[in-house]
Structure formats: structure tokens, C-alpha cells
Length: 311
Image (tube, rainbow, N blue to C red; front, side, top):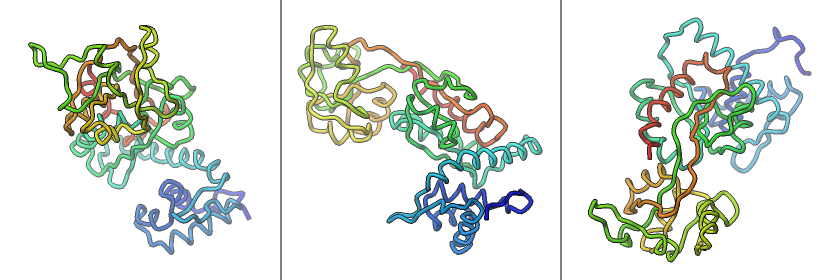
């Protein structure tokens, strides 16, 4: 039967619920919590009795949350966050983050540009603190934060919901990425200049979460021009494999183009087409700012981002 009095509840069960939900399996939750798997399984049995629901059902790859578990997750995570905040009040200068994890929501273009710098910064300033990168974007970021799926987010806006705070990180723009062997000739400054005619003549690879029309197509249409999109992908990380050895071009956010070019044989060149910029913002739940771990990661992002997101 469900408990009606908190004095009858082992509050450690809430921490186990959170680990089961986020790790998707009893064995992974046990590793995270430094417990044995039988102990986690026993706790799950008690959780099922407590909430009168199965909470998690077995799948071929672990445990999947039920609708009741999804309903409970933001409430339980918020309760645990309050506990963490109370400890931060008791020890505001604490720097021991071993075992803590902070989830950052961002699209993979921001992950390519900022992921490693954030990790390096935290290794120096908050050893033991782990970050979890989770995919999100501006249309869903508000719900992801409100539902406790992520603690912080980097997106092109979307932080206007009640209870959220945000700060500007930079202004985004675009650049072209292509195989270095197919670059146009360099000018007197050593820069490869891609003309609009040459740009349109190439095959194009579109990075899009859906659809076959992008911001480049809209800008070209204003000039009475069209491009030939030969392929599309949902992942920026696929571009090195799709562009290498071809004369195709991809027009993507400049920060992602810079990061990919630095690690591959691809070349970043200026886009010959004027495209509108967009804001890049960091957002969080205002209620989490007493959590020292989240504050530390927020500060790491704010420290790393401006230089990496600069035009």
C-alpha cells in the first residue's frame, strides 16, 4: 500500500529512483550508487509498493519508465535538488563534487564546439564533477528544464517560460565546410573565397532535424536561385565522412564548422550568402542556483563560450 506519512518512508529510495530512471537499468544504477545490484533490485521492489505501480518495466536493453514514473521524475528530482541546496547553505564554500553529475542540454553543434573545453575547465576547477550532455533544442528546451531532464541548457533561445533564467553567450552565424582538396584558390590574405556561383554549383549536404528545406534555401530563393541538396543528415558529426573526397559543401553554424575543421581534413570558408544571425543563450531553472555543482558548471560554460562562439 502507498505510504501516507513521510516518517514511514526511507528517503534513500528517492535517490535510487532517480538513478534507475536516468541510467535505465538496475546494474547501471548500482554502479552509479556504489551499491550491489540485489540491493537496487530490493529497493525497486519497495518503490513499487510505495507508489503502487511497476514504475519500470524490463526491455531488451534494461528498464523503461512507466507513465507513472515519468510523472514522478520531476517531483522526485526537485525534492533531491532541494536537499542538495540545503547542504550548499550549510557549506557554501564546499568544493567536493565527487559522484555528482550535472546534465547539460544542447544540440550536437554546440557539443562539438564546447564539450571538450567545458570538460577541461571542470577538471581544473571542479575535479570529480561529471557532466552529461543530452540533446535538446530551442523548441523543447523549456519543457526539458521544467521536467528536470536537464539542469542547464545551451540553445538559440527558448528560455522565456516562468521559473527559468538565462544569459546571452554570443551571436551565432554561419560558415561553409568542404574538403580542403576542393577549396577555391586563396586570395592575397590566404583566405579561400567561395563565390556565390561556385557555391550554388556544388552539391550541398543539409543538416536538419526534419524537412528538406533550410535557411540557405530561403536566402537563395530571395535571389531567385536554388541549390542541389544531394543528401541530408541529422548529425553534424557525420559531415567529415559525407564531405571527404567530394566537392560537396555544407553550410552550418560557424562554431561547429570551426570545431570540425580543426579535427579533420575539412576546410572552413566564408559563406558567400548573407544569412541572418541568431542568439546563443544559456538557461537554467532559477530554483537550482543554490546547488553549488550546477552553479560551477554554469560558470564553466560562461567562461568557455564567448571565445569559442565568436565570429
